[in-house]
Image (cartoon, rainbow, N blue to C red; front, side, top):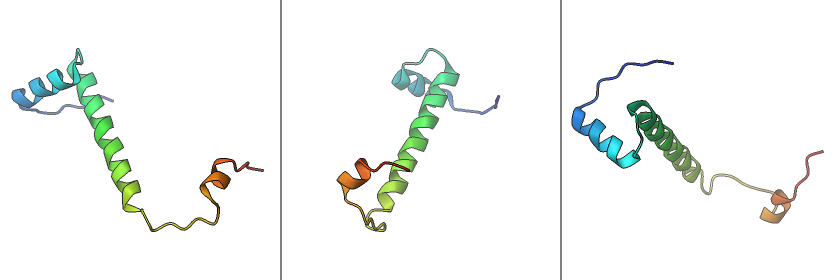
Length: 66
């Protein structure tokens, strides 16, 4: 999908240096994916202590679906 965005030159230059990508699109995609990954991790961490398991970690690890 094509999208047009306006970015400051300094930000885009820094982004290109940090990601070491050869084109702007791949640099922006990489940063967006990393941002989304971090948000998912934050969401999972926020659930700490809120879930109850009836199986041990070993039982979950070796559980076979029937």
